[in-house]
Amino acid sequence: MTNKIKLILGVIVFVGLLIWIGSIVFNSKVIPSSINLPIALRKTQTAQAKDIKVVYIQPLGQVDEKYINAVVQSVTSFFKMQCIVKPKVDFTTDILAASNTRYEASKILNKYHSKENLLIITEKDIACKNGSYAEWGIFGLGERPGTTCVVSTYRLRKNVSESKVLERLEKVALHEIGHNLGLDHCTNNIRCLMNNADGTIKQVDREEVWFCEKCLAQL
Picture (cartoon, rainbow, N blue to C red):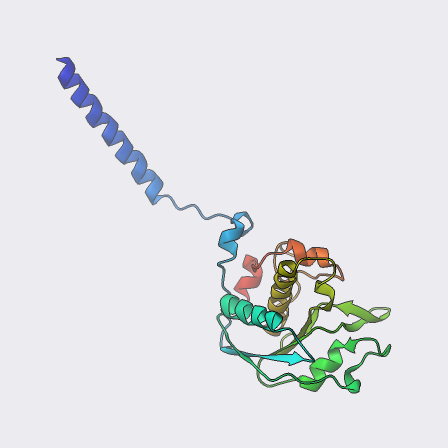
């Protein structure tokens, strides 16, 4: 057998081997765990809720437009809901907490409870009763299940950049809407949006704009 023929046969065998390997790779299905997904891919996750098409955004007191726009963009992108921004309403003394230094989140929800899906946003400090604490400062509060929730930027802004504030606001807003949709606090994955912040901003910062598979399956 001449060297030329040997070379041709070798090329044919090599090409055939590549085709065989390629067919194995192509037909194999690799399903990665959600926690191993790159952050860039997790950002593309959506969690479209059944039967909810519109969320009204209610500014309470003076709220910077960038915060309102951030919430609108987040809710629209993540939940695929239309957002309609309502005219702002002013604070009233009937929703003050007992200390008169901040506002009671449950009073806000009771006063502005709506049959429509409503997210209330404020820059003022809000609190709720938590165990032995008559006033426990919080980032947000939502009915579970229900139609109304409230978020505050007050505790999201301390000693951080504006981009970090907007990132935190996105997570808190989506978290509270998650409660409205019936989701409880998540104990399945520390990166899931539905974890209980438990009074610390560190938990919010370690979360991603992402629902774990257990929470996502409940929507």
